[in-house]
Image 1 (cartoon, helix red, strand yellow):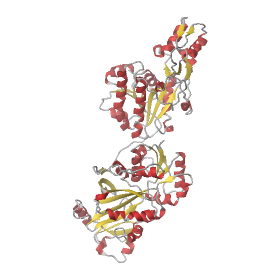
Image 2 (cartoon, rainbow, N blue to C red):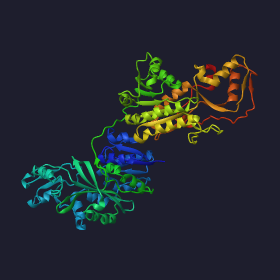
Image 3 (tube, one colour):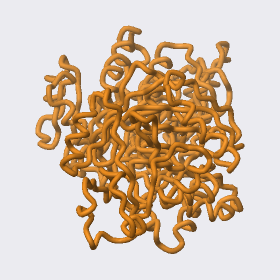
Length: 635
């Protein structure tokens, strides 16, 4: 069972980074919230809610309502403003059983104002850059701190910052709630020193050689681990992250001075401290009691603080194992897509030449703008003949240079590929291999709805009971192995794309009455009895489930529009009616008023039982239109 996590403000760099960290393992069901649905992280959440603005009334109630709807276990704030808001209202969350990954209000409040933070921690021996309220500083200006940096007392992401080299460069109408600090130059031996010096001389702000420290405290306010990196930032956003081994960082002792203070104050969760190493030692200029925009990068180094803290806060096993020093992190613009509507304009189909595939295509071709058929190179001629005259059908080779374009334009993908049960193991291997090669490209295409056609043959055929989706698979034949492999290959797509909903339909025996050969034994029985011939049934106790191909086609279409009901890759039994061979023959006799033409042998072999329980599908509102009587009459 996945842990259910709600992340707020996923449109922020912090929120997105938290989602990225959780998605590394896909052991979490992620619900994202934001006031704007068109954000990058939307496509990496299992479920997304558009919520009120964080400054609106009843914002907390809105978050709690969604959390309870989704059976959330823990909430992670993705915005600075929420830290104090959630902390001061923690009882509202706790009263309904919701954990919130947030610390106490006292330190959060101090950290949100740089002057307050300085006053809070400087007396405790922490090396914090001298910080003055600008309006107080201007009453008795001290040019010895120049060049200096002016910024909002409560700002973040380096917004509203500018550099001065002379006191008279401070505008008279500069505004309120600003602080001024001496500019911290890196050590002269630093590779970036001269670049920074040149920019500061011009009154420009260049963010390089900044030290970022992430301290992790467990739910009992005990310090657990640390990550240190040297970062380059662009517009306040880290774009290059170079990890540093804590034990080799000569200023580690200065960092650790924060730890006893934070433990004493009962701090829980992440604490980010930013600073710079100067010729006079390290100075810190900011603290945030949260995850950061490079939390996702840290996870890629092996330091997954989000997963650790979620598990720790929920009382589960949790550990951090250090991190790689043999990598650098980069953080730049990324691209994603989000499903826009519930409609389906373009369907890509694999195995469209199968009996069910052909039937489905011809039933849906008029209502679908475009159908892409991906077929083996050797089968293209056959498919061109099979679907000649259909202008909206595109036949594509898997080696077509534009294959990815066809996949990415798709609203849905359906897989009918499968070697037949009575074919060779080599054919089954080829079918699996065909899909395996395509899976990475399908995953990259971020197709939102994927249906894989599977079979009840994956169940134990000697078990005399109606099999549910909870029954263990029984891979005693190559055909069953093929089907299980297909299910698992398609389910793996959701590991990469939470918005790709994947459903495997385990079909029972499908009969197309218009194709007597396809109906096999059942068609032959009817034919022989209508001719007046005597029929001997050697296995009258064998049981199966029969479904009309018309209902199979309907079921696929039905599921395509039910995808929002599925959180995980789903398995669904799709059947018509369970029946024994003897009862099937009796139905035929009754329908055609036949008597004494069927001889039932005493069954000596083990019963083959292919019956299923499809109540899970029916609970979604599904119902077959065709009965076994209808199938017999049509045959």
